[in-house]
Length: 324
Ligand code: ASP
Image 1 (cartoon, rainbow, N blue to C red):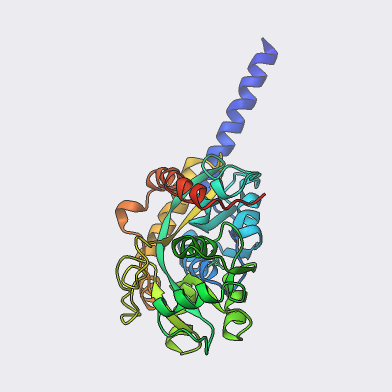
Image 2: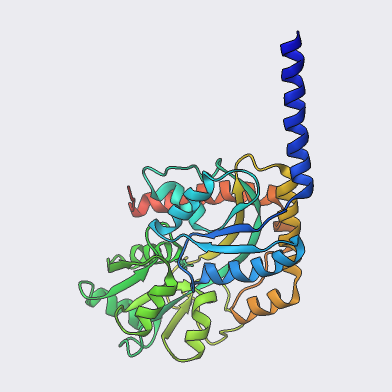
């Protein structure tokens, strides 16, 4: 009996301290893992949001870049972190595509995380190195088909958005290219601008400045509609690539088991960030906008990840692309 009441007292104390921890949270800096290299588009979104969230939470949200394996290294690290709200992940559409692309993923993107909220859905652009021969998307398609053994395409590894876009492109034109993987499209962009690789498809959060500065050739945008900050750029569909549509949605995650009160605090801080005029203006410069209010809740995000895994599964299976 005495042992039972001691056990109950211990359980109550643990419950109480978890509640107290959630109430005081955060009492120290939070690490936001970005599963790609610094200087790329996911990193740019994360740093903007983290800066605003730091102000709301009263503690620094520090971005840590853990690139490699198309985003699965960083995501895997957060899946195994303590569920205390001090390690969180900002990842993109790769959270859904990796579930099918990887035969052996050491974590489950649908069940090993608490969804905190969606951030932004970013259009992608197909771009070429300076001086690349094709002038339009249609010419680029012909050029790739005619030079398939020579054309190189940079991406951020299997599971990245640039990989997904390249995979859709190659399957829709029925031609392969040589892909060159990087830890993120920040470093890949350096090589594209330097002429070491020929083509890349990347988020406008990385490409807008380079396109406007004339550092790369821009061919098309991957969304159904034009991008306001790049109004002259045609869509892939207008360029003859039927049904080609992809936007890179980003979300924040905490490890599974993070108390709901902590997830809600993070979500509230994210919500403030997405209403922050500085964030909204910077997003607009970079060709994107915050997710609308009705898509920002943890519940919406959780269901969205599951729906996106189901959406991309048949596409990946029909392309027959897998990684170990
Ligand atoms: N844009 C990259 C991707 O292709 C990732 C990055 O470097 O942010 O997924």
